[in-house]
Length: 438
Image 1: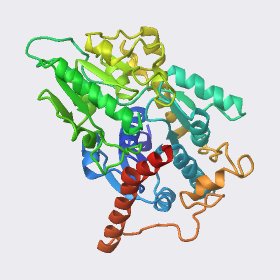
Image 2: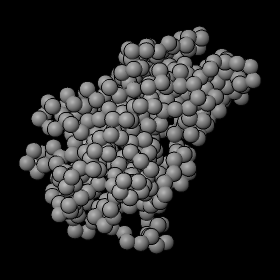
Image 3: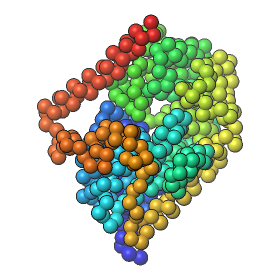
Image 4: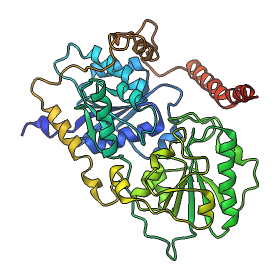
């Protein structure tokens, strides 16, 4: 056996938020056909995770640094990686694919490129999928998603062979064994989401119902699980943090706001409640009673329509009265939850495909995204320009590309700019919207 087949694979993960960093890193470890050395690259932007967020995510890499798009492409041109995971929003994936196509056009060998979704795909299905087309593997987190992804690609005449069924990489943990003495009080956890729902009225309603549940059941521990602290950004923008809304309420002693790793919170959860968070799938995988709220309706804008047929839909009134949803087993199987033990083999197909691509005689063919200046001349240039790339994937003049750590002045300017952006998002934008609703 050649030494090249036994030494660790060199793997890079490019991520643009804390949740995508978690997904990308865990995915890389799940799909690699052998041991890896993993380099983490955080794409500089509004959602670049803080040190606290990175620590809370609970995954590590052999190296980790922040980069611009141009720095990333330079690294990919100069470093001999075997596998690259693009853990980005759709537009970021498309821009990097065109940039990579450009820098690798004269190379005999290139890395295997993988991308996918962090969680439930309940909106912008066609848009997000076509922006990801061009990667060697587009991962689908369930059988249902794999079928939908192939249907979209086939429907526009794009190659669908990249679609590969896997599962969410962060499922795991001990199965729920029910309430028992010594485990502590019955614990209800509400998994908050940064942007769902997005109105002050709806978020205040959910918070007040959670507090009311705590008052109605003083023997229970009621936790509000938060994703980020005010001023931090995740995959989605949070304009109205629950922390600030909670400051106006008289909170009962059995109600607490908590941060931390979701898996650790689930270790003590007896009932998980959410609007549509991916945490519901983590909870269902562990057989924890899980409720997806219907109080605000079952609507595409909320994402809870994804759970139609799950058996988990319920209202706060029902939960207050002691209802515990029973999930539909066929629905769980279609969603890749694999509570029946099949999770151990969920990534076998992806590993086998990557091993085959790594051993492909003569290397891999050029990256060929569906979107080109011919198929999408009015759309693609704007997508690329947001990452300072021209229509052919070449960096535009003046594109930011730092070759060293930013100096103190640049760090201050960057902090000030981010602070101004967040102030605009969290304070100014909601006021403007409210004025528009008058």
